[in-house]
Length: 163
Image 1: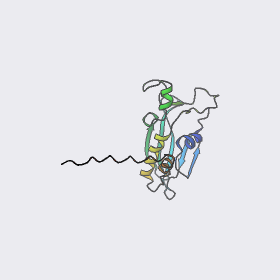
Image 2 (image 1 turned 90 degrees about the vertical axis):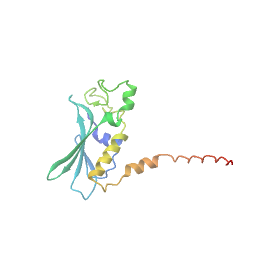
Image 3 (image 1 turned 120 degrees about the vertical axis):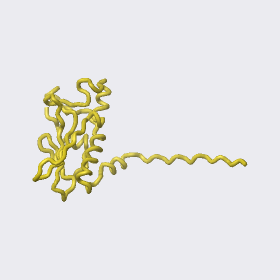
Image 4 (image 1 turned 180 degrees about the horizontal axis):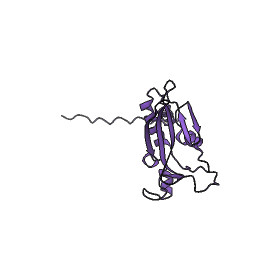
């Protein structure tokens, strides 16, 4: 089964980087066009072959190689919270907050089906802004535009003064 990496990064994470490419199972981005630094994101494997419990971010310099790495676990970002709640999986149980690409090699469904990318996207964007400070923040604009405006609360009534 293919990990369908392009779909994961495009549909689940919907990262705000215009300049990006997926090569194999790795997402590469140039969050800031004038920077020599690149952002590389791949899936973080567990000790089991074909099982992943998060994403790994690397900031790469063309001459110096990897200059920073961060691990963002699915469990800490709620990526599979809904899916695991439906399956009655909790922390410490096999299959919690992971996806595997070896369960059903003939399935048309991606192995990460049910993933929610909001928490990861927010963390990845925050991480990128540290290394690429001039990166436009299109994620928050997209989230703000999709939220309905809430009515302002009514002012509390003023009680008459007594002497």
